[in-house]
Length: 512
Image (cartoon, rainbow, N blue to C red):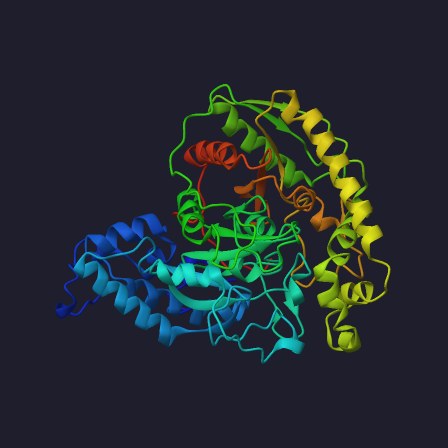
């Protein structure tokens, strides 16, 4: 176990920012900054230091490269590094600050999920089948990042074909949470979550089709936004259960990344016009918020319940009215995976996966199970019809209980438990909690419902640390396309909650 006092042994001791005199960077406050403090500074503060010339984007990148070299062997959250090109980007950003021509994310490092590729990068999708798949062009998210001045040093790990809520593959191995190496970083944007929590980047990209932004954010103590369908460009315009989104260590940083990467691309057939989100919002005094402990699907563990009560207390201290409600989703936790399969495999995603059926023996167990289902011929237009009937029914139940009943938002845990083994195999099950074996797909239970209703905006906010030192998270769910409402509540929460990644509240890479 590596504590903060032992970081020197890991090569993470204090970094004196010896800046060459010809760069024009002043040695002011930067002299007191350590490498560890630099890597955890929010983008908002870094940009201020860059503008005042007390710190350089080159210094930030060097510190985060050192952190990668020291801890990635422990957490295994990176596929490929691009340090040479990133250093060129950082030096260009340094020059822009000197000239006064900085762009919105100038010099800020972003970890890029193995999905949002640049031209020439290999995008493996976590699969041996795609290990040499070099991309001809840049993904729209990466195009926007580069246009904003962001620095792109790392690609981050994903489960195979993004089909798991934990991140391990035959190609890249097991990714582990920096807070406690026994446990998962989540999935499918797991590497992005782990890299952010470890301080290897300042922001990170994610995408979410069953909780793939919110789960990694909850496991790693981060803010993350699952936007409503249409806020981001999609290469699969009919697969309305999925979408890209931002991940960050602070609320304000999450907004900054959202404002850069959201909106249409020139080839977007159905993306909504771009609308930037504000950083500040009115207070939430008098705002009515509904609370569900778990949609009646499964009871969260004791730690999760305790931290949700603390989060509710924060919202009430801000003046919100929080009432517990009983929502019947109309399905059991055991139905979650099958409902997802009907919606996903009956469409374009099913066709894509079915084409790989003859190579399923080269896949992980979980990817092979989805591919075999896709190729089974069971999931066609009838399955999609049944799925959409369920979506209408579920939406009506939520409206009747929450949004049509005077509540502006719904809150609930993101996770049933934070203590999921890093190599958990959902095809085998056997996960025990409170003396009982849970359904193998349980880790989707609190996030997937809001992909079924993917027009609902959802923010994950961190709620604290469990007795085993693992973060957990709370979802703030809004009615369709009411992004400003969930952001208003998240903003008030963030202003009052005890933050992570400051002082002693940082990952220690323990294994206990």
